Image 1: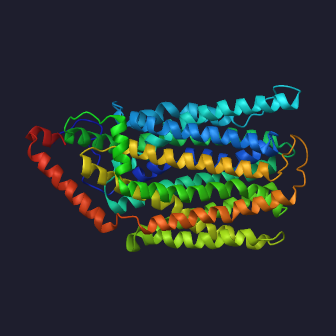
Image 2: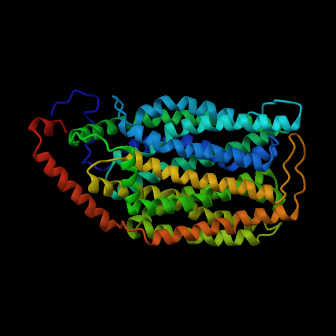
Image 3: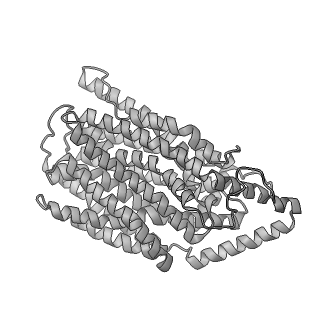
Length: 493
């Protein structure tokens, strides 16, 4: 066929091998969200209590409100992106127009405005400021990140190629997390003496680095998305999308989807809670510096980045469930040992961080590699592809869980007698009750979620063989549909 469009040289949906440039561009789309999410996850609670001077209870409330709103807007954006019609496809417009506000509101979270000379009034002024900025940031974070995650099944349908594609995605994701920590170490060293200024400079640099790769992703995947979008529209039977509540019912009747959500939720509560508590653990229990806790998180994430590609290869031979069990088993050993770690055992602390990185890598890779399989099962059962609604509800439940987890961390610290640092003053000596709470939050609590995740992974029903059968039935259906289309329509596909 003679196609004068600029997408004529793009691979057809049947050609499942993606080019390196497409994989790199796709991976780059997770760089900005990873940088911002990592800085917020590692530093924000500590920033609130030890730089801005907020009490741990108020800080926990800010994090919970932001995460709950982040969760609430996910299914809305997911549904709207499924229904978006434009010459750029369904997902790209959200990324194009949401990228700059996403960066602006990330930066504003690291300002410390002064509202009153009265400490109590100023605390509440800071509280409402950070709540408002958090709501706006999370709105635009969802607007760029959720449509991005829904691109995965639109780029390839191949079981192993998706795992490989996700390894590129999470290489950029973990790479962005690592980059943010390297920048933090460098900026903390260069900008001396003023923690508020240190965080503001870090935020400014990372804002620029977070926005630009989103446009690289759009540019580099546009041809492939254009081809698959044409094929999707050509194979559509023209039926109207199901009502929202009916879609919700179908989503939660999809049993494998519930398993994937549970696995992901347990893994990421463990990840985020551990990361949120590590600064307190290193500074107050191990009696080390702010730079040291940044180095600990850096060791975890560098290890996770390296292991992404190792686990991806192992998955091709042993399957996703086996990889998840291997990684989580090593992480469980690390969590148990952290609880018993004593001040002065700095070398062992870094060894345990290295060990934890093996498990964190599988928490990135495996649940997201399972999601497209679940979506195809739904397509087989209903005849519709609803990537946005599935990804939306997955992230919705994840963020509700994380909101609860972070809220619990802040409240446990507050209830244990943890003493917030007054802005501009030295960190106070923490009581024994707060130190014991910090040790429990870094060890036994994440351990419980990891064990629950292993149980869910054991019963996950979609194996490699089951997925192959799903794809075969979908291909048979599409072949039957193609026989009823005109030669002109087939030519256009």
